[in-house]
Image (cartoon, rainbow, N blue to C red; front, side, top):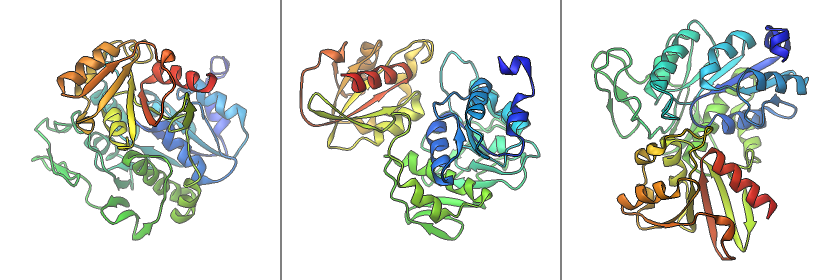
Length: 366
């Protein structure tokens, strides 16, 4: 309603405020939470993940803090950049999300490239070719090398369409000369996490390599607003959960860790974060918010589940069980987890959007 009355409301609400934006297919909510945590107390933001203009307005009205972190839906990044005049923009990754959004990834990269032309303050993932294509029109980009295992949506060069060549250390290149940026501000390697020439000691309590990557992107971007990397890292160590994600619940004698994943890239990372001490439960729905087409299940890397048995639930539990069976992974179908009896042991539940909400409600109310 506010934007209908005043189309310039976002400009008005962000005037004289320091704004950081973060966008990408996976990790927006977590990275935005990391930015707020590491920036210090009293940082405004769309904590619930409402990442379109209406959600941005609501977040900005709710707080008068001079410091703001907004996560932005990939399709709205250009509008957010134009309206908020951000001090920094964090670009995490680009990959397919819902299959009913045809040609989404390549079109988004083209739009980002246009919208970011001439912009400053961009921190971008150097290991994602689509992000590099989108950000290379900006000035003085802070490139960050972080592990990016998912490359299936960037198999062809965005400039010439020839095949891209990838190697195990994350490097990539094309015969036309398009390649991973050679001069990076920050990186993760076998020795640890580096910002410039400084090795940053970070004992992150959120699990998985993806969250270490998100943390490095956040720490690098925050240097542009005066936050020293070691100071930010200390604050990040206090972060244990993001809107219920990664939170551990006690439920019917089990300790259950809840993880959100919504597409092949995110699911692969989530499954790799499961410890050998945890049982694996996966819950899949295919409602409007999830995307109606669940055939993306066949693109998930499930090699980390080899030798394990998975409990499958959700509206599409049979589709999930079939996909796992074809991959040689044991699958047990439980149509209604509410009927599960008491048990023992640690469990990691990996669920997509609406299934995650159902599990969160179940764990918090029963």
